[in-house]
Image: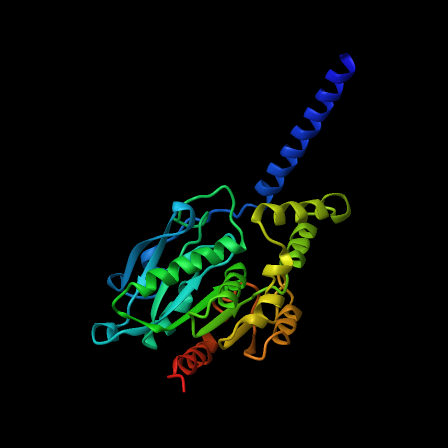
Length: 296
């Protein structure tokens, strides 16, 4: 009996330690919730042009977003662009993309993903959950009478860009994707992150990668932009900063080879790109206008 009790205690201790490690992994990878700063001024427009909205998403959760309509929407349905931020960011931090899109006559919906900004919390978030929130935003857009539902596009940054490509790979409901600073493969991105945090891959990193895949319910290979981009049938603009130290510019070049529908725009910037895009606003708008042209 003492032997059995000792074995049970040992197993219980191992199970408790394993659970503690799992909790620690998810807590260590959890995105920081960055508060919105001066939301009314973040988009470079008069406050009466920006409306806060709420959207249902998966799991009975609620997303908070900001809805910007151009003057043309009072006369006819207009094309719309859904903007998704990156990991540890929020909708307001994507504000610099709004003025050129608004001036071009596009409606813009900027959403906070779950566990970010003002949106509801979850036990964890992930790139597939970002993609679910993108789908929820598109569903909301399709219910708006001011929107031409045949002319929708996605613009995402980093994890938001990877999620936009993941959505477009499985749904033929957008006319274009603008990908800002997307990584080629999430396993590589996580290895870079863990190396920055000095987490040894041989000791703990490999286990963390395996556990994260178990939690999100899929493999990194299945959701990697390097693999999903090949299934995206709409025009895709890959924008990447030459000075990006978070995701090497080589990732963008690898992604370009994965799709015959993609083109690459290299800009003088880092991973953030918010301000680096300003000199290329006309290129971005022209890309969307071309994608929104009537299909032959």
